[in-house]
Picture (cartoon, rainbow, N blue to C red):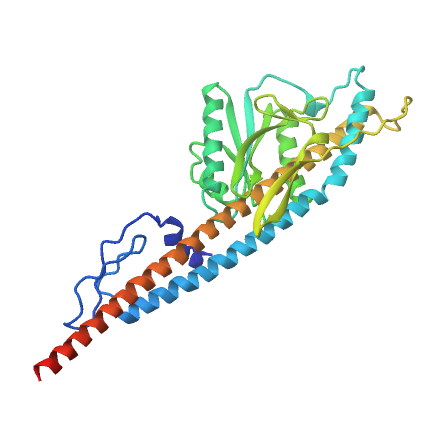
Length: 369
């Protein structure tokens, strides 16, 4: 990846509006000292024809790499979409059971630790970044959002702990341990699974149930479209008694009526559509008997429900990262295409000027004879 980064970095950062002042090409004493170059090309001083051809070939090879990375990222976005959709049946069934039990126990005094509200003195923040770079500003957006949230909480006199998911965020905050209380680091991986989500959930539950922290928030990138992602701060714990997951502004997301994204192709272009995934809650019989204590059932269901919420956040974050990488590689490919075109134009103009100069010399010599 480092080799690819060294090749694509100039294309990712190049500005199309930059102008070329000129280029000098060695063609002997009769070659023009300066050849006008089009806007958008790079200044190449004292370049021989062979060096120019090598540069054009190098840019062409780089474009092939970025095109391939774009297609790979697009295929992985599709896979991430399928993972979200594939997890829906389990989530829907779990929500039905959870809502029905809560409806049945709505009039009873049920004490579930994961729904227990207590004064917030310390918050655990779970920050989700990517494992790799070459994805534009995706990782920086999440890191900056995390820093901003920590600053907001500290300004309110609230202490913060930090768990990172993804190598980029882990490395960044690990280097700043003097400023951030980094508890643990996890890798995002290329295909988040329920086991990955459960590993993260176990640490979260341990911190919350032991009252080491009073609140748990998760910062991840919500996949809006292939060209847009929304950094989201979501409250994981405590849960509402309805099993809803709420954002930090108090807006709760009903998992029975949330959205899923679908990758489509229209007019040969990739696009993303978000559709409502309505879940009809089945009616349970009026008389409900539990083989176990209802509190034990809720204590078993809510961690399971939280696992599905963490997994969904990981999948959306991964999809956002892949979409950002696809866009970055698309931009790099476009820049490479334009750069190759402009370099070819500079090369052809210099070659034409040399040929013209040689013809003039031949004509002048013939006339003198």
